Length: 231
Image (cartoon, rainbow, N blue to C red; front, side):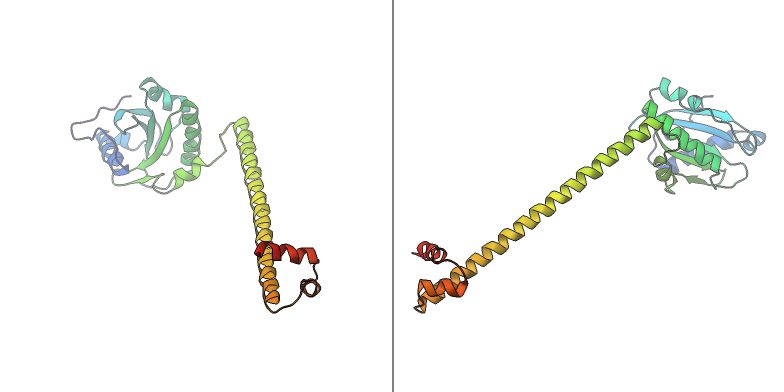
């Protein structure tokens, strides 16, 4: 059932308050009997947030509503909606999401991914208030769920993660090796510099090359190389 917007309703969504403002009026339009039943609506939008349609997907009992995933996205596919928001009411007045609410949201997120349609939020509303799955971070949690992700996709994700970890580990090992080599080079260069300074100081004091070699425990040729470089 297509829900018509009134002249008072915004035609685009900037935030959850906009969604509630529209859907609160939609809920209050129903007669008192229908307000005591759970409704499930879907708002379809384009990428810019402009509302393409509002559809009543299902009408349930006072405490539950049955949801068929393909019915939820049927109109979204026909009207080329790229983003959708799920909305349902709790006649009891409670804004606490039930396990069933979480489960169907989890499932619809995965169906949307298959269809390349983003389920960006799920609102539970009453005539006086609402709760947003996105605002409470529940949507973020459900987007990480693997419950309804096909097995082959889970395996592919694990393999990609394993490759990523192996690549990062290799990079760390290479970095360690490079760091160790650089440190060894710096130590060697420092030792050579100190040796040159000491040899020059001994030469200035008139100590012979042979004696310098004995003092430093190196060959005469090594001393002569230093002397030659300084010449």
